[in-house]
View 1: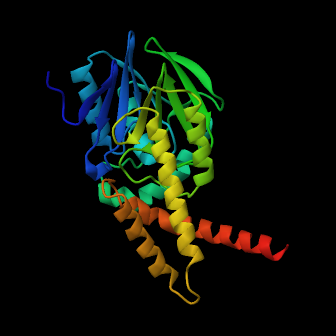
View 2: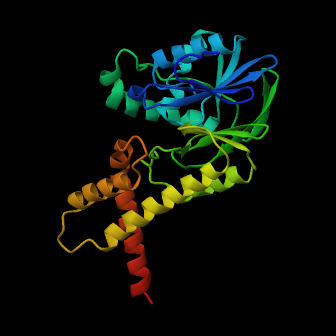
View 3: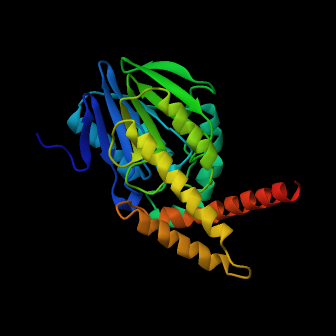
Length: 291
């Protein structure tokens, strides 16, 4: 049986769609329910949202009844209006919804011209299912919606169906993580919370699905990046150019992960990661001097 381009079967009743590299190889998933189809992730560009929905129609047939936005990043929420125009309910948590206007304005300024007319100008407006974790039934599927705190974004939703968890960019498989906010400690807490759900399947925001080992790999990646940045800050000679040091550090991290895609994500994150390490160094120095 032939499937549409960039569509793969993850497991029984779970499918994955990957956008082109032009829109960051963003993964969306759908679950085939007895009464309809539920989608996780609405894609970065309107054209990719349309392609996703066309692929679902070709592979699974039945109606798409709901879609979920997992965190306030445009690759998760930009396709909202495309879904809504087809009469599909798009849901997210109250905390994620509250972040979308500011994030959309920022990303529209950065990407709008580059991706015009494919990048939405109007602020995406999914519907809130509330501010607390809850269970919803859509398409004949019982879905547990876990409302979590900061990680790669300011707020997160993890969708759980049976032993499957859909985690968005909290996990990137063979891709560099989106660390722009440099919230590494909360991020590790999110991974621990997901691990406690005892999933058999983890479906990441980028890269192929896999088992719970993907959580360990993501944690190890964050730990390694944190250590490399801390070491670089600690050994920076007096009077050295921090900008040059940061550039060298980006190159070192990229070389350390030759199979990871989207090295540009490391460059985007480095200023915040560096500032975080500088603050931690200052706190350590203060603690030592106060003894």
